[in-house]
Image 1 (tube, rainbow, N blue to C red):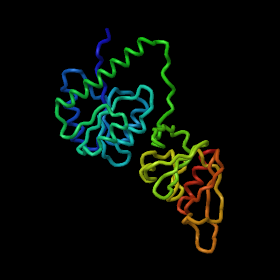
Image 2 (image 1 turned 30 degrees about the horizontal axis):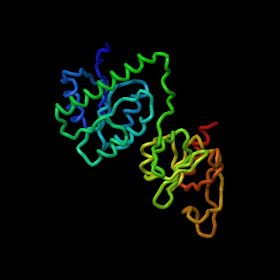
Image 3 (image 1 turned 90 degrees about the vertical axis):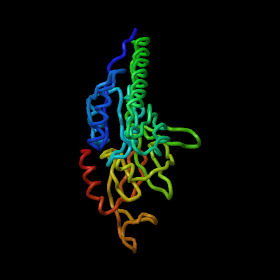
Image 4 (image 1 turned 90 degrees about the horizontal axis):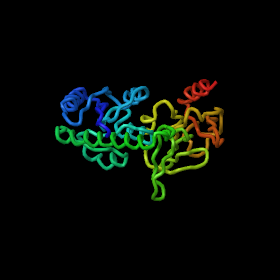
Length: 268
């Protein structure tokens, strides 16, 4: 019979007092036993910690500067043996989006002791079930980690596109185009939000385009086309970047030329 292990919990909240209260509630919980493995004040700090450590459960605030809770949850989706996520926030309007991100539970502040206990019990049960599945299939290797994914709803179906396959995002009227080497997908969202969530893996080359740094292949002058929004009247040459695999050219704003050159230099 499998014994119930002590839950290792990561608390992510930008408010120190909120983290302190959650720590006290977690450590005072008698059953199941749980311990706070670490605290983080932002989504970025949490991702950095998770690169070298593991936990069973993340108690996650939604609204934080920079990478928020929803962005962190999306970044962790699809990872093998990913920790369970319980959102802890004062804003109940995010509940539907939280469960779309496969959250285990959603707690509103101030957190009640009995509600947290119920969430910890669900996380502990999930851990026991996972251990049981592994014991039944000891030779089964864990699935490969494809890293973070972008979730897209297209024609009524949910698509999970590995972030490593994305070449660029481009704003088109009210929507975004996500481009891979083989497909173009239409999605909702904003480039500003994506830029904050994806960190320095992508480069904002223009107000309407966010390009994977690894896909930047060439920078050269070009004649601006209608809609570029760059260059002067009269057809003055602007700048464009060539994107790998699809050999498409995207306009580069003058203020971003230096950043694109730096990205190219970093590939050498």
